Image (cartoon, rainbow, N blue to C red; front, side, top):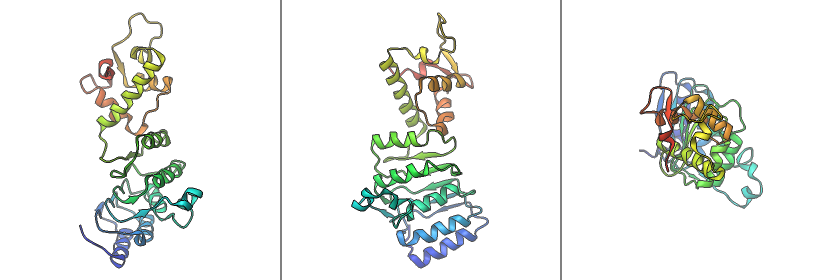
Length: 249
């Protein structure tokens, strides 16, 4: 926990770009400001070995003012795009896999604009984007879920605390039960692989679980689905899930 100024940041950024050995770097709570972002972004474009970069708890600022409200593209390509460009640089660097940027002074309305733009990119190689510590509403969380539904690798973390597999599982189970209530059906009607069978199955495979969700058009986070299925099937044979573990009623 230091207070590294612009000159020191430029030196660190150069070291990141030149580095060919260090794989993890924690620069959290170092009072980095927006003046340092350009140097950090430049270093990430040259990074060849760093796999994890932690910039959690610094002094990066992005405000949602009248100009941004009128023209959101200012955050993507305009004068206020420094933070977005840094995120893109991290998300598309071939070596970097984990990027932590939570607990900075970034308005959640701004981060939503940035994530919506990021989700349209098809060359994302980042595997974990940690925005823990930004105050995200339930509606915004649901929006983020929908943005990255088709990305099978990127795991993202938002909200006041870092979510666990239990959090993602409970969220999905809630969606499943809402679907059952709205359509007046039982769980077995979603996941029973044999339509018309008199005796519904009590054990399903991972593939049947995924297929049931897709058939019912229940959204699920692709990057987390393997962990969710393992969590639900932790008391069963490998590759299997008991419908009892899905029943939260």
